[in-house]
Image 1 (cartoon, rainbow, N blue to C red):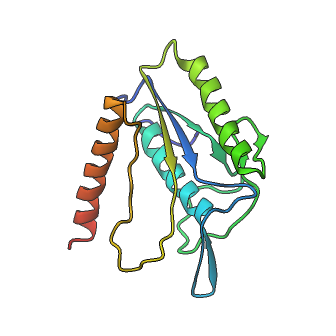
Image 2 (cartoon, rainbow, N blue to C red):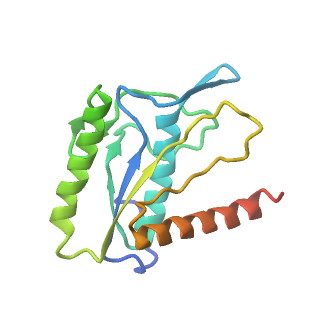
Length: 173
């Protein structure tokens, strides 16, 4: 965080809890390409770091819920897997899936309570890089929100529209 220069204050007062999918004992979806093992948690974490950098540059407060003290933003084509990810606060990631989910919720809720007096808005952004069996399917990205949250729907729709516009500019057709 210390090397990221703030260029805007437009997100001042906003707190983002970024959660890279899986981590620690659970690499998530695993694939193989050109002799390399691809692990979901490594790619999700790389996306989280890039998003965190962008948010911090715009004045947001960012909490990385899943962290890897040995990995930063990597420009490698294939990202090597490790099992040394930890939770925010230096907590070990449990092996049991239900315990992992509960721990994430506990950490976010605790931080939410600490920040609620001063934060304009607090937003949780979990990132997963799922695999798919049907290679002909063009459904690659999903933005979920709580069905009773108009703000959540607005944020998810804004993310989708931004993603589609940028993807179309980078990969027309």
